[in-house]
Each structure stands twice: as C-alpha cells, then as structure tokens.
Image 1 (tube, rainbow, N blue to C red):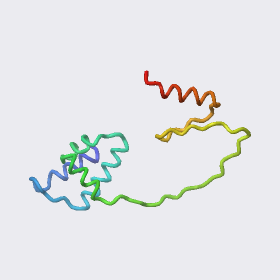
Image 2 (image 1 turned 180 degrees about the horizontal axis):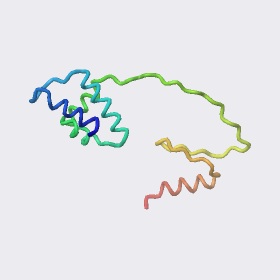
Image 3 (image 1 turned 60 degrees about the vertical axis):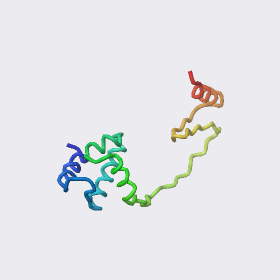
Image 4 (image 1 turned 180 degrees about the vertical axis):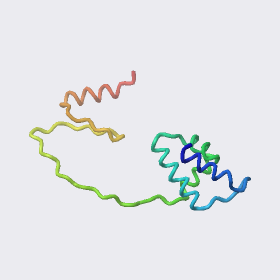
Length: 116
C-alpha cells in the first residue's frame, strides 16, 4: 500500500457526506504525498482515486496549502576555459546538447523541425 492509499483510508474514516471538513494538517500531508507521487509520474486522476476524493477537491487543496519557498544552497564554480568555442543548444525543456560543430547543430535543428 502506498502513501496515498494510506491517506485515503484516513480520509474515508472521516464523517461521510458532501461538504465534510478536512483538517489543515491532513491537507498538508495529502499535498506533500501527491507532489511526491506526481514527481514519480503518477497522474492527477490516479492520485485522487487512491485518496477517494474528486480531482477538483485535490486541485483546490493544492492551491490552498502554501508551497515551500525555502532557499537551497548553491555552489558557483568557474566554467573551464575552452580553447575553441563550440555551440551549445539548450532546448525549451532544459535539455542541453554539446559537442556538435555548427554543421551538426544545423542538421540537428533541421531534423527536429521536420514534421514527417
């Protein structure tokens, strides 16, 4: 049994019926568990089904619970100097392609833009 199913049993034990009240702590735990499961690829509908709540309720809880804006430490390192600059392609999704010459980049872009 996964974390969402366990929370689903806890939710099911609450007073049944439309308009039942869920505590802030339970909502916080549900939101955290859903975010972890979504990061693993679980769908919204699957998460809602495991919890036994409508997708709309789950969506509302995600909006209600304040998200952590905690800062994380980062380390800045100097980029090593390259003798010869080569193109770097950064896709909108964050993928980075290095090691191609200009002709290779042109060929890559040509292949990606083909809608065959």
